[in-house]
Image 1: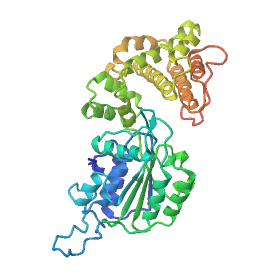
Image 2 (image 1 turned 180 degrees about the horizontal axis):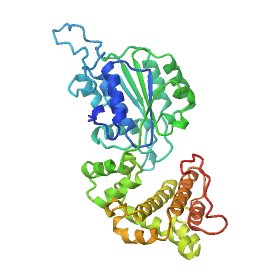
Image 3 (image 1 turned 180 degrees about the vertical axis):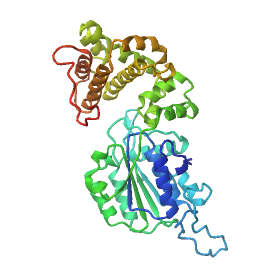
Length: 409
């Protein structure tokens, strides 16, 4: 059962206060756009916001069947002064199981291969709903191309012509709206421009640039921030079943503030092996002056067969090592490091590198993360990155151009 309230959102106090203020006033905008990094709780907040808006004990929550019953039954509450879902009324119960007739939840889906046959999309949607109800830490993952079904949006558009079923308003949550088709965006735009007084749209995205500006300009935007590393580590240990403190620390560090990403990687058995392999690649350019670097890179990428996510993970592990180098260089305590068991090796390497050089290498790695979003060869991309990170010829030690300029002094 989905029972997360706005007051218990993890690591988003400003968002929580803002949404609770909307609920307490009972005055909703036509559409909201929740944007921010993936895996920081945007979808959870959207469903919690919808649950609070459909609660029968918040301001403006008079239900359509609040008139006296012909059978002498007590009429439901016609609203109150709360700023969050009460968790006890009929509306909260139905929304908690994602079965409220006035709560519509749309999300991208892709068919799964089952015994050589393609699973029907309808079955995949039902399965996802069941998983979401059972697991409060369920993580949406798209292993292949996924999009929001066009027939779902058409069916929804037809329902918008009618009044809500039981509540005073209808809430539509669209997860990862950037995966909608162009004709779906056009239909969505019309609904937002000419909204029904009883309809509230809540869109979420982690790729804001892929949402058409016509949609962005008509939504009230709510920004979500990355989660603190300590919070991610605590959730992994206390709620996600990651008993190993070292693994929880490593997952929290590599998640870059995304609890969803940390949860998706918690069952990976070889995270420490991946980290060690990534760190080993930093040695050949500095120690062997490129001798054997190409061979090491090819082995690391499976001779060009490594996927984009695996390549990204290798580079991020290297960033964490360089971050530890900076911390060790300036006397940070052992327990603050991602790899505390390598404290002595970090201190020794940090003594031979100044902060300026470590910062330059971090810039090279960050530039590589941007480049792998394109259609690049895994082994060539990694070889070029490693050569530029520690090389001393062909301009490898030059500072890369950073478009945002946030590394500039």
